[in-house]
Length: 561
Image: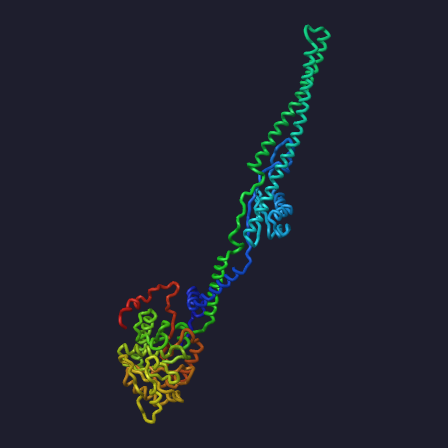
């Protein structure tokens, strides 16, 4: 008996994961496609929202500052205050009126709709509005920005207008005082000219001194008025120039107007599809690996050898779709140059070599081919093996002993009116009909009509004698029987042959089933020579394998087998 592999419980490595993925690649692909479809459906059904953003730059202005009338000092804006103005109910109502919106002003100001951020050192307000329609989002946030900028600039313009009104009033009052002083001075001068002419008398001199004193007082008064008048005139000029600069560098300006956004918030539709594809792919890989860990199918040679307690004599890869039924399943006779057929032919040649070695060392000339369950490829493998032995120059006879569901006859297209069953049921010892199938060194014994007791016939002394006579005539006798767990025929026939070869389907035969097969064969005293691993994919090119491993098969496509 073979002992369990000491490495069976090792932590799975990368190679194990890759094998699991490769063995169940269609499951992984199905999960990936399902994830892609679900993601696409979600992307198509979700209600998308769009963010439109506008940027407003703020510049210093004396409006709202503490500069007073005599100092035109521009102060930096308080960004918290400006944000409050931007998001004020009055601004929202102005937007509603301007755009004719059905939504309420307070609804526009909800944090989920409108948000305003700023950088303390940047003097910039960044406004964002969210809506299901990208064009509407851009219109609303631009309207908020435009109305806010208009209001801020209007406040500055109003400030200058108020200041100009005050300063102009002071200027006009001082100018009126100056004009009055000038009129008084002109009147005194006229009086001097009209009153005093010729050589003045002493009384006239005294009177003139009085007029001169009055002129001097008026000149002093004029000087006291001219100084504030000039200052006021300069102030008017400064305010006028500052007001004029509003058009060039306004206190508020839309630095970047919002354009209708092209992508919805969050992940875009393409990103969601890619995420769904990747999620499905990861789930598929996880499912493939979990199923691989839970699967007790005998997929590898080591699994088969542990369960059946015998060596694997050969492995047969899966055939192509066109070589699975009928005469096309006889790949040893096929002229196809497909890689799968080339590989299958080589696998049967290697199996032939293994059996020839056993025959030489253990003097075995008859072998029984069976399986655990139906539809594992037993009859096809037995037939191709017999052809391979015959093509190797060894006279071979293929006995169709599966009298319940004969298949060999259909593969070769031969009749089945007489055969093994008629010979074994005859009153006298009668040799079964031996049919030539056009393959050199190969003969076939059909199964014949299905008898009522095929198990008893295969366990009879007559069948044993028949095998002995065939061994004396042919170098190899290959017997095809029903599956072990489906009928007792293979168990009964196993005592008459030199050894039993169990065919194992790597896709469906689990180790517990093989244990049962081995137990049944051991109870019957059968000699188990080994196993054939059918539909084996372990030698397929893996993810990191070279794809030219079958270069010899491709190079020999033009050669005759």
